[in-house]
Image (cartoon, rainbow, N blue to C red):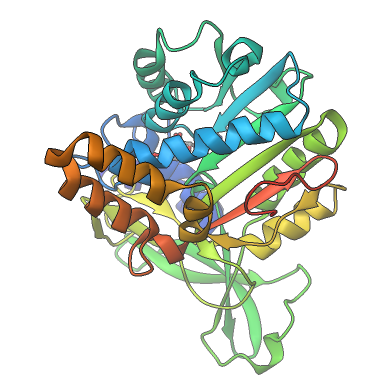
Length: 357
Ligand code: SAH
């Protein structure tokens, strides 16, 4: 057992099994040994590669979306350009570089990064220094200024904790982490589900899994409330599904492979697929306008990624193969193009930008 596993085992010995969501939070955010206390987790040398790490094409399309959203808001003279979960800072770097050429956008923007990890903040600070005169870090949405928001987040929601309920003996019981008879971390079933049962639960077979991520819905609700009151638009990109349903999507990833989540807490990235229907419902309930759920491939194509790749290939024929491969990974149906979904939320009205239009 590593140090964090021992600490979690002591916690369980004292207080009983912990729900999966709490375990996820402990593994990701333990200040000394949690996953986000490590530095090199994102990128080719880390544990997983995200879209901005594949090619600047992705960030350029997000930049175009942000500029279009700002224009749809009437090009306000002051606004907050916000990214949640910036990771290595690659996406914000590409967005700032690509949006510089749009007159007025940089002058009107104040950059805000929603990030809780002190090491990640430092890494982002180094990467983004010199790209914009106003860059600030906040721990949550409540700390954002009272200005219209243009918001984006890639692979952020999947990292917020998820609860799981397993159908067992006809009841839905919470999936927890307890201890086996040797004192090692082991899967356990906890109390019966107290929340409202999901539609269709009666016909699910024994062993079926239902996932519920209250932290994600709360984040979407807070964001939507901000957008509805102060104006703005948000783009949420992540792996997940357009409709709510049943199934176990919890995953641990280390060194670009699936890992056993209980084997070495803090060493693997823990996440689950995002239920975008639930995100959309949480945002709608706050009075915001919610777009249809689109695939990443559809939205990147609508933003003009293929044309942009053509232009770049003509300018740098020596890089054509690399660009072609990056494009295929970002939009391809067998790569990120279909698994990754995009949902947009707007404050007031329905801006004429993808995936609204
Ligand atoms: N968006 C990046 C990387 C995503 S990794 C990319 O596309 O490459 C997840 C990011 O979300 C990390 O920066 C992590 O620190 C941040 N994060 C996770 N949970 C968070 C929370 N509750 N509050 C703020 N940031 C969080």
